[in-house]
Amino acid sequence: MTAVKEATRRPLGHFAERSLAGLLVVAGAGVGFGVLLMLVRFHWGPLYHADHEAAEWFNGLVAPHHPLVTVLQAVTDLGGRPVLIWLITIAVVGLLIRRQSRLAVYLIVTGVGGLILDPSLKALVGRLRPVVDVPVASAPGNSFPSGHALGSFVAYGVLLLVFLPAVAPRWRKPAIAIAALLVLLVGLTRIALGVHFVSDVLGGWLLGAAWLGVTAYAFRLWRRERGRPVPSLTEGLEPEAGREIKPAPAEEHVLEHPRWSVAELLVGWVLVFGALYAFGMYVSYHAKGTVFDTLDTEVPRWFADRRTDTLTDLSWWWSKFGDTHAILLVSLVFCPIVLAVWKRWRPVLFVVLAMFGELSLFLASAGVVERPRPPVANLDGQMPTSSFPSGHIAATICLWTAMAIIVLPRTDRWWRWLFVAMAVIMPVGVATSRMYRGMHHPTDFMGAILLGALWLSLLWWVVRPNEDVRRGNRPAIESERVHELDDELARAGRED
Image (cartoon, rainbow, N blue to C red; front, top):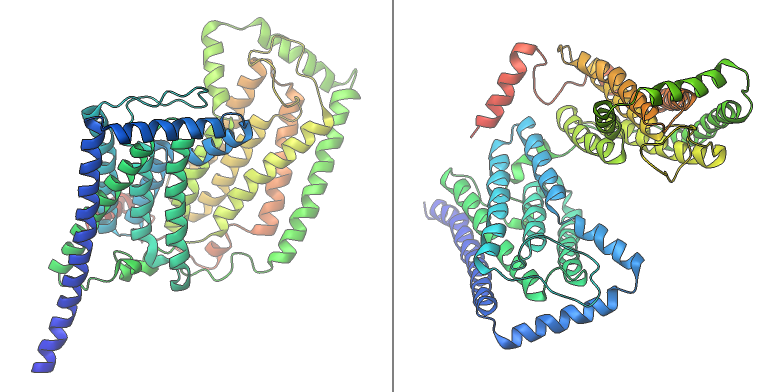
């Protein structure tokens, strides 16, 4: 009996010890933030002078070096709201698909809390941003606390706590170190770019630590009340969910023969480039008097003669669907969802290689062919690349066709045909808008089709993105039937 009582008390004692230590850390962060808030709010002299001297020193160090400013801007964007909201949203959707609603709720509550704390405290304190001799960046709103420092601490911290069980034990400490380094770098970039004082960043970190600690402690209490063991935070919030939240738990090898596959892709890339080069040089410089020459002469003029304000605005929007930002955004939404549903890296690799290959083939072909733009008014002005092939159209073809190739055999639901339709509608719409705006010839469109068809065919043969379907892989959600899947998603969101 004594042994049983001792066995019962031991986990409770460990929980109490960990809780006390955690509460002390949270309380320390909260008190530290409160003290710093008062010092900033009442303009304490030593802090004021230290902040301004640091701002001037960093400005003198960074301002003369434009490449350094570019790197700092890239790093600081990793702590911006667009990136953090995307990360949390994709993680929540993936957790709901994997039926981990408790962790999804925790992510939502913690993330939303961070979003609320930042603007409300900035409005309360009302501190102006630094004024430096040579401004290299700007930011809206007030200065204290740093939203990037707070947001990155909360977002990367909460993602680490949730997904740590999916990381192999030997990689957990490196993962923690990488997350901490990323948060540190984001905070330092805000100071170096002259948009925050040192105390703003410290305040953001302290507030982020306090908020993350409070929510983690609440989640651990939630587990304790339901009779579940409360592990060390180095094991994550829900260790038993490790297999379910692992991206591809059943996949041993992404490709059976990776070295052969790399060699095949390299050889294939060269052959595709050769075909593009030959066709591009022909239609650009050797097709006089042919049907290609007639199309490239008459079609741009036909579009230019029919321009109106309404059509010009519409063409601008359609053209944007094929630019880098839109293509990247769609890819960054589609790939994580595919990974969450089918638990395979190979379809994701197919999309990534499709886009990487398209970009490299487009840049290489445009660089060697050097075709001028059509001889009409170019509504988008001077572009850094030449006309053949169209990068907008090629990227749209590769992305939407790759998505249709992945989705079509994996579900029997009616909406799979939407991907097939979009694989036709999106490239045609982007191509029409690019020709209307005087940016491409019809044969540039043909070159984009040639690029997409050859490169995707090569990837299909080498990567075989749907091989797991042939072997019987089913989605993470049990049913694919139209009347059941939405109900399962709803149940996943309601699970306790």
